[in-house]
Image 1 (spheres, rainbow, N blue to C red):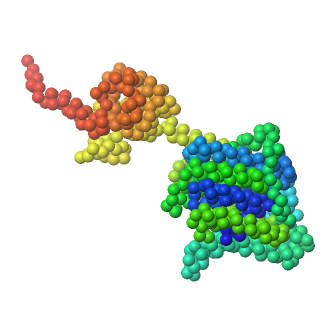
Image 2: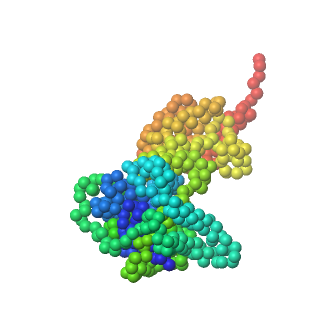
Image 3: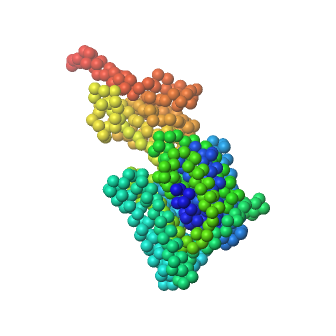
Length: 558
């Protein structure tokens, strides 16, 4: 079932990448089998996917003519280089690097890529043949030539989009209302693209639309694989492809591991991030030598695999062998598939990649994440895929540094009849006159000490007659050397102002790092295991002068 359903998709994504259609077919055989044998996910399927296809086209189209021998060789080299990089990451057990990108950044990157995909397919939907130096140049030229659109192609595109989009939204839900089991309803929904492509191809054959009305079709699919040779690797090519290969490897890593983890959570399974990288890397290396198209973890391919009942990697092995059998039988039926209907399948898939829900959630929950989403999406659209992802990474790290450099700091007090301490602005709490309890909710390092000190000085200025300052360190996981020196100076300044500094709830690793420092020696006897112990001690200290005053003899006037 999966083999049948992904055949037209493989053709479409090969054309999206600027490669001959057979490249997508060959990339759906051995790479799929290799990943199934090596990867750790039970149900994920690799192969030609939209993201890798559009990245391949955007990288190579400015330096080679799409479909030309040099273009095909460079696509294979790109697949090989990215595969070697991913394999190296897996072999060195660096799968954790995929966590460098937050989900909003990944969603923004995919959303921007989806818009680029939609733009690239517009000319095929209208039956136009336009070329441009950039994605926006192609869009401008396409819009200029809209009056010359092929009307028959436009009809095919319009009907195809309506049927596929409508089936995605309502078909499975409608079938379930008529007592069709959910799994079967979803499988029927997955079959609709194949049905639409079959009907469109049948119309082309019956009404001779390609010859009489100029409807563009796939054409002959030559099964002679363009096997990659090491002669295609030249130093000039390596220099041009190094950064694109790194970007492709990074995005492929993030997408593959993210999808595998999501599937594993849903199925209550576990995956190995490093094995996933080894499997993906080997798949791309094999793809370089058989067809030359980069591959990745495919959302739609995997969804079809799960909906069809795949439970183990053997399903992907059967899929690869099934495609091989279909190719052995013959590919004459592919020749007259209209390009417009393949573009329709790509467009509908790209529309589903636009993650507006993530943007809404991020905007409500954390504006910094929302800006990272928009930055990655707009960066892809304005600057291209490579600079777009770099901008997204920069925004993500920038948001992280901003949060760390402006830590949350709370003045706390004790809730009556308890040992719990909470923010004085949120709860009714008990405090001690002349004593200030402050909780620092972040590690202290060179980037945030200035903000921490400024906030502490501001809070100290608010308390008249302050003589004790207690820093609650329960959220401090690390103090770097810059912050340590600044803390030492800060404590000296407090002593000069007759204010005693105390620490509570210092974590073991932090206290270990402070061993032997001047700062810790000066605080001997002033560090408490719990905040409540410090509160009780200072409460007794505050009560002593009052008790002495109460027991002293009354003063008499002579």
